Amino acid sequence: MAVVNLDFYSYELAMNTQAVILLPERRGIPHASHDEPYPVLYLLHGHGQDHTSWLRLSRIEFYLQNTDVIVVMPNACRSSYVDGVNTHRYGSFLTRELPRIIKNWFNITTDRENTFIAGMSMGGYGALHAALSCPEQYGAVCALSPGIRMGSLDLHGKADKGLTIPAVPEIDRNFRNTFGPAENYPGSEYDLKHLARQLNAGSGHKPRILHLCGTEDPLHADSEDFARFMSTECSGLDYTWQDSPGIHDFNYWDRESITMLRFFGLL
Image 1: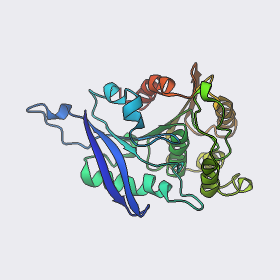
Image 2: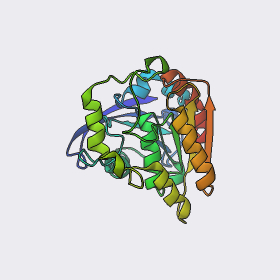
Image 3: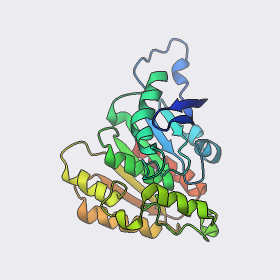
Image 4: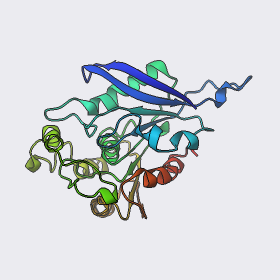
């Protein structure tokens, strides 16, 4: 696959930002005739990582080398992919502006059934948040080891389980600036359970949802709780929960990315 590194201006963020794009190459075979748009996968990084993480730490390019999908890996810093209370508008950037920018440069589909979003850890939360709040845009979503309630997680002291976020005040301060006071979270635009209830009760588009987590992951208990909630309160949604051995690291995410790609119908 071709690798494109983009540095571009975002009007939602009011600054330059970056993305890595994987472009399929098999349509370049002489005499091949394929004019239809490409399916697109938005693939989100975790907390403290960046737009290069999936390319550097997984084999995503290898898995997709004989497919037709375009993969878009944006840089979202430590935003949790939302419009924060006192931070940048990364939610609007991801769901509104970025698709327009990519469509302007590359032949991606506008068909929601062939538009997918996925991520790990913070990116898992971001993928779920995007799909639940903008269901008309995505045919399916996959959350790998998501931080179900970003901003209120115990992220420190679990390096042996893959959580290596340092105990520095800036991290907690960033979460407060992003999500606001903890007491305002339930029922807010950031609350995944609240968004799922709304989607379940609605009559519009409802993306397929795949939720994966390692059984030794420190976030596994939160994922199990969310899975119980989805099965009891959101039975109208096409939701699949799977856990398997693994911790919070790219050994697990790389392995399960195959499960993700098969769920999307890309392998």
